Amino acid sequence: MKITIFGTGYVGLVTGACLADVGHDVLCMDVDADKVARLEAGDIPIYEPGLEELVTHNTASGRLSFTTDAARAVEFGTLQFIAVGTPPDEDGSADLQYVLSVARTIGQHMNDFKVVIDKSTVPVGTADRVRHTIGEVLEQRGASLEFEVCSNPEFLKEGAAIEDFSHGARIVVGTDSERVRELMRDCYGPYIRLQEKLMFMDVRAAELTKYAANAMLATKISFMNEIANLAERLGADVEQVRRGIGSDPRIGYHFIYPGCGYGGSCFPKDVRALTRTAGDVDYQAELLSAVEGVNQRQKQTLFDKLERAFDGDLAGRTIAVWGLSFKPNTDDMRDAPSRLLMESLWRVGARVRAFDPEAMDECRRIYGQRDDLTLAETREAAVEGADALVICTEWKVFRMVDFDWLKDQLGMPVVVDGRNLYNPETVRRAGLMYYAVGRGDSLHQPV
Ligand code: UDX
Image (cartoon, rainbow, N blue to C red; front, side, top):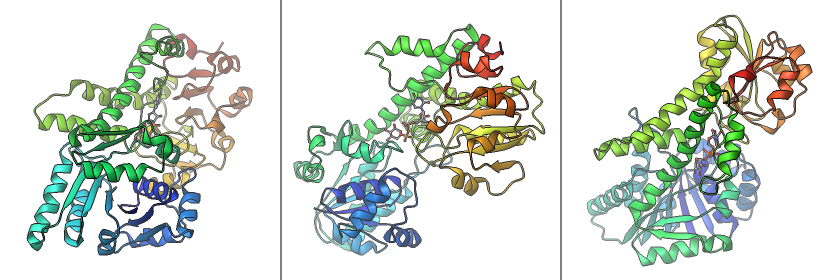
């Protein structure tokens, strides 16, 4: 099949590379000429395991190509995926200007039947707006051409996107057209394991499914963080509680890890956007607002714990930070807990020495050169001369630590662990004060 993808960001690029890899002819269009030139040269602007090989291999085989030429892109595929960004507006709702601009482009250049597929995460009702926009442009052109608009949201996790694409739990397609159902079956057909998982539903249900899935996962995390905060105050160990409740299959073990709050490009944005959507239809989404509120507070707990450990005296201190990305296996720092922590530390006059296996370039890009930020080459170099250590991301490289060595490095024996990586007993035995998440107040003191 001939497939066009608008947008070579995270979702567009993964979708394009994966569909090319199973034999489709894919043309990815982006308005950013630099980005297209880089992609053509095999230079992938994002870090995602396996993506570079997939793009290079399929570009070489001729099945995957890139363009800035909108007319050519529209002409190319019968399927036209829209995978451009939907950044949040000031009020938290999704900004649809890029999606609707692609819709206009398709309307301007199409000359035969097209299926326009919303892949970007877009509010319920967007497919109708895309349909309306294309219809308007066609009318202005005096062209009477057939087209369909359907919703096919992505459920990719950063760091595992390629695996998710080919082994995902489901492919949701929102459409009421049999012709579209046939074409989408052909599109995903080569993914044998996915054929059974194609789920057709109406357009609005598909659009809401995406938000509901992310909101549900975010809710599980905020719920667990709430229980962790309670456990902390009640002297209980939330890790034992987690195992206790996860063993009930109705609850399950997934996504109930307490931590320093969820980040990334999806959960924070989507929970806020769904809350806004609810407001637009005069519904007060109280649970969603609470999920967001608990998460904000949770991100702040790293700083609060440090402040408590230092009796509020953090000015002039140097704090080592392990992990900058919002989760392991990505360099993405969007809404990462590390950012709120570092910004709070800088505000009170503390310095940061940070290490992350992948996100240091991203950190430099965001914060530039500053006297109160040192990016260390290794985790060991980050703790050199630091007063305390905070762990923000559960990268594998942080899991094994010689705590006697760590104690010798730190000016104060304080470890704030936002990811519950260690056995509190082991850390305490080295004489460190261990502030984890929800592991009981009694665990903070060295033995
Ligand atoms: C998420 C969804 O999982 C994916 O289906 C959707 O398409 C996009 O949003 P992603 O943002 O890549 O994917 O990250 P994910 O692995 O889901 O983690 C999100 C955040 O939740 C991270 O900050 C992570 O640290 C946090 N998290 C996750 C917890 O704090 N506890 C958990 O138990 C699980």
